[in-house]
Length: 382
Ligand SMILES: *Cc1c(COP(=O)(O)O)cnc(C)c1O
Image (cartoon, rainbow, N blue to C red; front, side, top):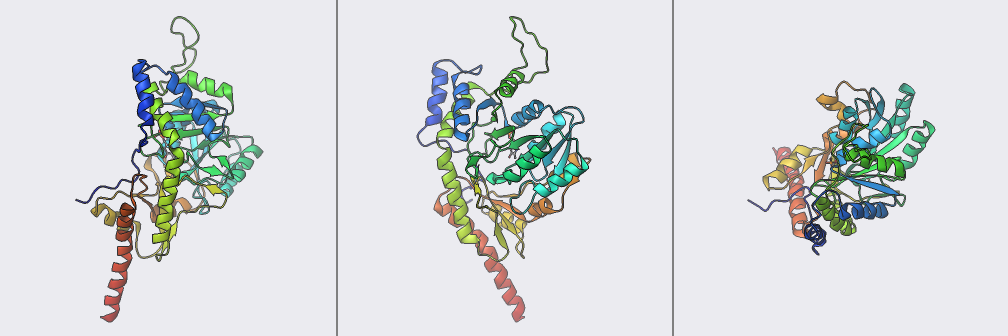
């Protein structure tokens, strides 16, 4: 069996930064609770993305959940949520007993379509929050999204789980709205094995999120609770890994971009292939290199051919309005997300890949086109 190539796997620094911080935690027996790595990781991440405050949490999902609570989303409230995304974006809306209304994407960004968002406001004037996503490290059209949210005076939450290192017009994604969230899950551009971060310029709200995340313990000698609490904090060990990973974020973005450019050069000219859209306002992290296929070669052909050679690839996210669990909720838009799902493939984007790995992948994909042309020639001479 040929050597496995992953879609995106954890990539610790060559320098061993992560181990140094983890070792410090062990040496001082600061395994838990919280501790200096957590405080420093929050400060370092906030500085990196250019925002006032950050709360380190157990996951990106937990961060979305607390962002919704901070925005005051509760029973039966409506939240406009990007339709084309991972279910982790939408699930916390249900945790809060609120109601998602899903909004389609546009082809220009693959993210929330501002026109569909405006239409949704016509239908639902009473909305508690808008939840936009920066998929695959491509930024949504934030000028328009921010303007619409301001006009309607609605809280804006950015799911930047996939876009750490992505800038829109020079400003980091996740810092445009009232709240932003990042994820350090195993396949993200940097990972802590699992973890997340809630960011905001509102210090009170971040303090409140930390309070909720530690079981809402009131200030008292005994255990006193006036509010519902959660066990959502990040551990001092995990935060140590995060501090080390943050040091190599720029390196990872550089490699991800190299991978995207490689695919673009090798595959971009093939009949029916379109690379994911990179707009001139966008400085993406290229978390995953994605393509759409609109010719005779289908995504399943590409995924199966790669799988046969022990190479992992994946379809584009399946839109939320097509998911059985979310079927009862309303949807505003057309068929953009649906088409991207049907025609899209996420190509291997692991930062540990060598040029040989990339050539192996491109060779297999290009082979599909050669086979197709050969079959057509045979057919035409019959
Ligand atoms: C990974 C991801 C999340 C969830 O992050 P976790 O840390 O895994 O909970 C949320 N939204 C999107 C778009 C993601 O890709």
